[in-house]
Image (cartoon, rainbow over all chains, first blue to last red; front, side, top):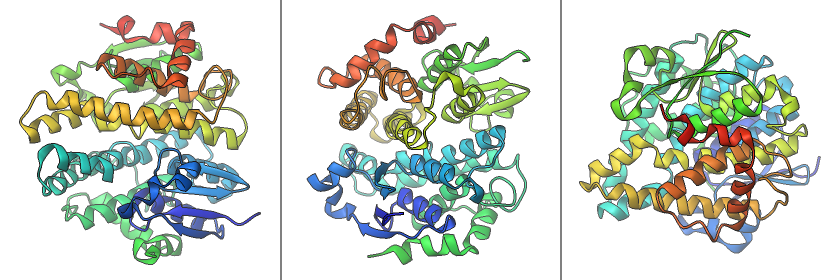
Length: 210
Length: 210
């Protein structure tokens, strides 16, 4: 395998997901930091890699891949033995539904460029915090309701899956913004169980800071 | 196969995607309309099926499935011969990335409950239109940039895939809100090619109105 390069940003949830996946699959990689606060995602060089101007981008097997969940699906298919997605198609459907409850229904709404637009239309810098807390709390409440149908140490059973790769960075964000998550008992438990695993520890934003 | 039931709403993009998929795969189904404007998605009965309170929900093979793209992945795996996702894993990654450029990066931001919150924090009913047009135009511009790397009649090659199931409902929404999409030539072409196919025609919101 050629060198694997992840273009990421330490605080980006989508980057955090892919770091966990690469660690779980024991794939060596180097990171290149794209500083979102300085607009590096909009440089001509970076847009040539990622036309949307988002992080992460993964260069692997001579291919340039974008979109964190599409990257994770690729990695899951490349190395199915690691169980990022379960083998049964109905189980995979459930893992994906849990992942999307975060990756579609919370994360994009709170993304930086969306929050910037909220500030712009309200004319209030503090509107970002209210916005972010509202949608994280609402979305995690809905995820908790979905998770109540499953047992086990992780989102889906006793082994971490793509669903947990989405949950953990969202919980990190919830804490960062001061969202009270104590009522979401399954989410808090699952996050705690993930935090014990080296693949999740090594991917933490504090360790990804450039 | 037992009776297949789709709980949907005629104007919901996510429902529209699943209707196209079921039609493409030649799966007979009946629909049950969940009127989002009347709050039927928050009824106790519906929440028992779909704890997030979103449409669509698909009951198939004795299972209750939520999250449109997780449903479509399930259908794609159930009947791979229809090509909703290509057989090669790198190609699947690209189709998913194109699908997510709509399903993650445009649709959730413009969702009804998000737009309602925009109205609430700005105190202006007209803020919804500005918000929706801004994010559809921005997101379709980014999708057009991604699509410029591919040729063919559809988003990915000469056969419709999951990417087109996301593109078409988003273009319908763009037109509904008066977004000028003439500059997005690949998107307009692909949408036109899809519109010739009976599976897409039969799924159109005008035909799904209760």
